Length: 255
Length: 164
Image 1: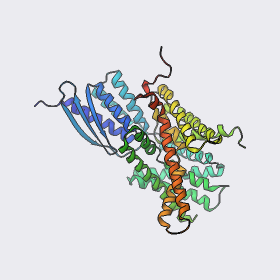
Image 2: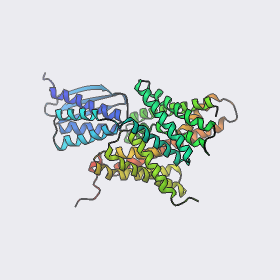
Image 3: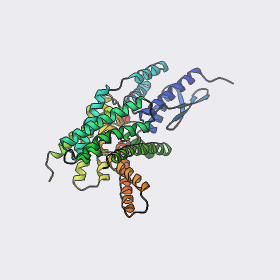
Image 4: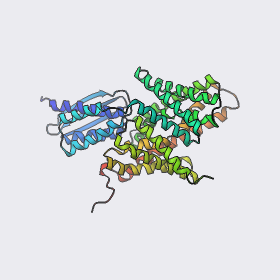
């Protein structure tokens, strides 16, 4: 019996790597499937893919010999990173148009993986500004906006720190929500500004699971019902963690 | 009576709200100005529909549809997939407030049996939950509409100006 090419095995592991990166960076199921089959096709293979939230399975069929190779990979913990999603999408087109080979693809993945995030202070300041903007959108004045800014800043900081200490992801959200609502809750307790409730309601909005929830419905519309439900459940648990943090602060302040 | 400058001002804040999430999601730097603009325009559309008496679900659908359509030329000019622009831009419209009211309602229901406020709490929890569900659905549908009606697998294949 003839053996499967080593190239096939290497390509399979590269493709699974790409799929796992996309899944953990916040791409929808349809996008993962399209990207992987586009690259596989450009390199002369037929591919079949099973995508789930925590693992991917890929079968590559060599076009000439019809030999096939299957492989399975777990995805890493999720953290939204659109630089990776955008980079991989660009790469997949260059594989097709510039006829890239496997080493080039691997080098590009390595490059994308090492791309830096924004500086931490920039993230903290701009997300806090977003929190203040939300407060303004709901009708807050300068004082409420200031409270929302401070609460978001502290909440995000605590969330980042607890993620660094490798707490369970939902626990990180809970800590962030509790911190933010303890700070904004203090303004409700002492009646700071005209409508401190606004600051309280908007200070946790930076935690809302927007990407899991939107991806959930994107998957459902696409017909990837299973993944859609899984992502939706994930979003629900995150919302629950947020509500629990706010409830904790409300119990502590008795408001 | 709403002053005329109310909507542009809200647009500025909507833009910053979208920008904050874009930074959180580590969007490529070249995409940031477009996200600010898309967030502002989509949000203003939603506010205008609400202002003229549309309900929140319809308003969100209108805003998200505009963002979905604008994300295609943005994707072409900045060489990034449309979702990189559209997801941060619609996040300010995600019904965070409704979702958390539903959650608080559910938590209250769990600890509250047999009192007369039970049905009030149940009503508001269910209503907030349904609003959350339908707004999310309309956001995802709105963003997906350009792809759905052109029936393409990639935004790169959508031609904005018909060649020849």
